[in-house]
Image 1 (cartoon, rainbow, N blue to C red):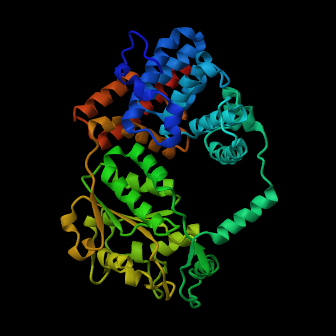
Image 2 (cartoon, rainbow, N blue to C red; image 1 turned 180 degrees about the vertical axis):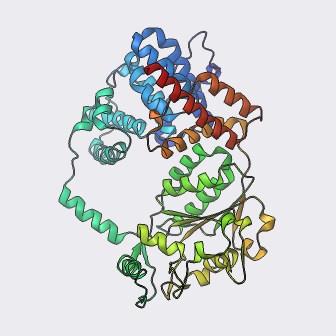
Amino acid sequence: MTERPGNESGVGSEAPECENLLGLWRVRRPSVDAQVRLRTALVAEARVRLDEVSAATRGTLSSLLPRCESGDPWAWMLLFPLVRETWGLPGDQNRWPEIENGCLVLASRAVPLADLVLTMRLHRDVQHPPDDAGTDGNRAEAALNARLERLRVRLARFADPADIASGLGLDILLAPPAVDKAADAVRSEEDRQDGPAMRVLLASPPPTGDRDFRPILDRIRTTLDGEVPLAPAPDPDDLCAALEREFPWFGAVVERVHDDLLLGARCGRTFFGLSRPLLLAGPPGVGKTRFAHRLSRLAGLPMGMVNAAGASDNRLLQGTARGWGTVTPSLPVLLMLRDRMANPLVLVDEVDKAGGSDRNGRLHHTLLSMLEPSSSRRWPDEALAVAVDLSRVVWLLTANDTGAIPALLMSRLAVVEVGTPRARDFDALFAGCLADAADDYECAVAVLPEIDPTALDAMREGFVRGRLQARQLAALIRRALVAGAKAERKLRC
């Protein structure tokens, strides 16, 4: 993108680094700094073009730009069809550099639409190659068509493909998928059978006389009998790039996860697994629990959580044995039963505050037996009355004070310190708070009320100057969303 005279975005001296962005997108993910430079340049470009669009578009565009400046990916998704009014259709070769810039920013924020549009651009290159293009177009087109089919499925989770097609002129989205359903069903079954799996129940659980527990035991026998699938290992670069975007102050944690997955893949591991249980140590309110939730979602791992601070014994983790009033299997087994996955992620939150007693059971003691490699392979579940294999469970623990954790348990953990978010992490924090609010209300971020730009500027300044902590910021964002909803209600009245 060419910097215009009088632009105040502050990126003019760095413009050469933004050239050939499609090529950059093909070979490596952009750094966080590149995302900020591109976002700033795009917002400045859009502001310059405000006079060139219709009045209706101008109003919508003006309201979206503050959200775009904050890094809200859904604002960028809404912005894209609007700027198309002056940036040209996808077939307009003169305007494609600007469109590619916008797509790169969107792709860097993990918005599927951007990935789709860039794929369609590559698809166009294959179908209408330049004179100096290579001759191996058939293979490239086949690969891109296969990728397009996968993107259709992903896109459907976020928006109606018909709306996207009409907004961007991508009619190919409306074509029926070129997939042989019978062959696809066979491939899916083969993939399920050939994927990583393991035996969890090391013997058949004996019958029970407990009428309440009997239906649960029958489900366990049916669901966990034989080989149980393992969640496959994701691409370490893709997973950790997404985590780094959302949690830039978790650099050491993300690096640890990345290197563990990378080495595991190099050694032939095909499922998601960490070499050692991971302890995230740091002050409260820095996002440790949210990081665990995002890791499980991005990696496709089922997740369960134990709040150790509120545990007076070990039953939440260990379950309860036969003979007690309520028979309950251990938490890992319950997660395996719920999702039929042998490597769920178990989060033990605030493990440094765990209670318990020798009589009622100590959470730390149960954790030790579940984390120890030799005992985890044949861990006795007292509710099932048989041994189960917990060796592939992914363990993530959080703590504020590692000094309160027994030394023996600490010796089993990979400890990574987590610092507080920095001033430059405001955009990522803000986007995360909006995403959390959208999850709570089961809607897309784009559906949330608009936050007043003045309030947003005040929150940014307060955070940058150190007057606001992450938890305070999250509470203020919720209040700003409520204020936005009230303002919208008044306008309607």
